Image (cartoon, rainbow, N blue to C red):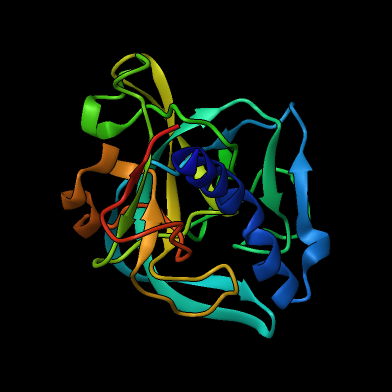
Amino acid sequence: MKRHRLVVAALVGIVLLVAPGVMAQGLLVGFRQCPANFDFALCAASTCTPTGKKIEVNTEFGTAPFDEAECTCPIFPGPSLADVMGGNMQGSCDPPTLVNGKPTDDGIWSWYLPTGNIPQEINNWNTGKEKSEAPIQVCSSGDFANCFSFACVRAGKVKGNVEVATCFCPINESVQGTSAGPPFTTPAGQCNQDICSQYPVGAPFPPGEAGQCISF
């Protein structure tokens, strides 16, 4: 029963704990479900690479620069959850036409949908149930990328015929648009703590103790 409560808390937390952050920015109106006709990148189980550049993030007081990471994320069909006033979105679910400073016709947003299975690069994008499992782990050290509501560009297909996108995300940015650090939660790595040092996509609201692994 205790484990069940933790799983529910993790699921609800990753989706709904965005709302207090959005509320703190006075942008609750931006938190919405984007329709089924919009594909989206699901970055939750991805790891990323710092680019050495800065990315501008929407905050309560305009925009703020954060260190930038590049992430490869599988593409899913909608509907999905977005903050159209957060990330670097511009108020609507329409695909971005400018990604990482470059015009594109292949823009797509990184949004979120609760799911326990996400194809991952660490398993060669295998779509099988076991290889795509995405349990949530708590990292007590390392840096994370926050990809929620940031612009991506379609990047073709990888092994297993999985369509992916290249997403550009801030490092250590909280849902309030402020700097954050560990501990943080991430569905990346299938509970391998080594992933915590590989810039996994995550968020700084841990549902349990450091090192804890919460399966769905």
